Length: 227
Image (cartoon, rainbow, N blue to C red):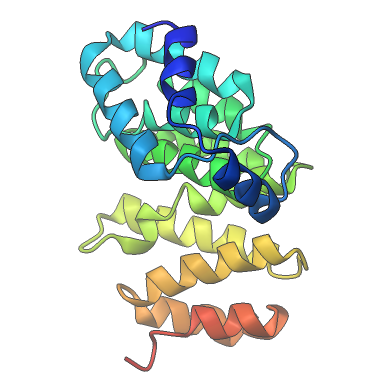
């Protein structure tokens, strides 16, 4: 499977009408093919099963660099699995490199899902993520919260994981005065997920810093606390 083959497979599913709608919806200046995510996921699953890891990494990098919405999604989905052996193969380095240039929530979130799995596999990689919290690119700063969402959802945490949870909450605290909607939404997302597993920490955060959040983010963060 060459990058040209993968692009041709995606182009065969293109829908110009849907592509125009997606461009209007996402508002990010890049080409769109108009392909639904499940169809991209199906192709990526086939490619994952048929390619060696080295070939998969090469294809993922090439698809992302094409800069087409659907090729970027497909590139991220090629790396979207919990176990990659060897785990030092370069998958994390590739995802982390993408994070430095994220532009738009959709492609960033697909790459971040792949990144979540690499972080859980090796939490020492959080040292890289910590550097994103002061990055000039808002999408990169946001990724620090999106990629660490697994620690908002974990049950029966080990001390190391509890320390990571508190560390990420510290990042969220540092973001609280950021007025960007997507940053506020990411904080709310993290706290909302956390509230289902650690209501006390969520309440403590909102008591200490909730007034600094935008009203919609504060409401979203507390959505499940009364459940």
